[in-house]
Amino acid sequence: MGTTKKYVFKITAFLLFGFGTIYGQQKVTIVAAANLKVALDSINTVFKIQNPAINSQITYGASGKLFEQISNSAPFDLFFSADMDYPKKLEEKKLTASKIKMYATGKLVIWSKKIDPNKSKMNSLLSTDIRKIAIGNPSTAPYGEKAVESLKFYKIYDKVKSKLVFGENITQAIQFITTGNADIGITALSLVLTPNMKKEGGKYYSIPKNSYTALDQGCVILKNGKGNTAALKFYNFISSRQATAILKYYGYDTDL
Image (cartoon, rainbow, N blue to C red):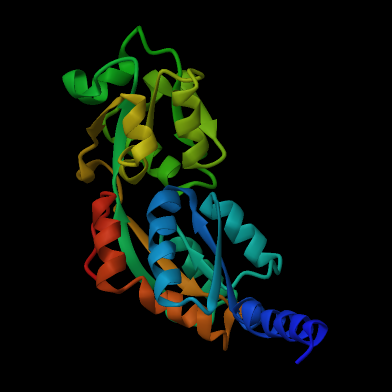
């Protein structure tokens, strides 16, 4: 075989086999609540190792915003919500293609770099040193909604509502605190346990779970993902021992 033919053969083999896994990959488009960012990224890393032929892409946002996009025919295959309500609403709209699976229960915490909230617990929010309190937008972020619920349970909502600043989602609320645009915030335990947040040096106080409705979180295959075997594999993988171990590591409760 001549040099030119050898070269052409190598290029052809590279195109056929080198790119074969890319061209032959199945794709699943996942949207998920912002509180899941680090946990679900970690789960996705393990999933990709075990399923190299699947291209799983995840976009994060407030559950309510994602619900609106799905309702308006956004081409997503799988939805991980921060609650059970949004998946149920999609089911009512006949926009789902699987049963709704409760994959985890989240937890609320108060987090601050400015003070230690463990000293005064919920009353930390009443301190004169605290001028701004960050939470997720209660109308679109379930963690923000439950934060308000907890404040009302302790009868301090009216005292602190003028201090509240709302992030579009729970991740943005955290950013308000880390950048100094808020002194303290109510956020997800899963986010404060991430390596980046630990480096921030803040402290957190776990808000008693009896002060807010359980943050049960559900996932569902969407109508757009019907028949997508990659979506089904990821949906099933969230129940695996590897996935539940990661969820527990980031502070979620799970019965899976």
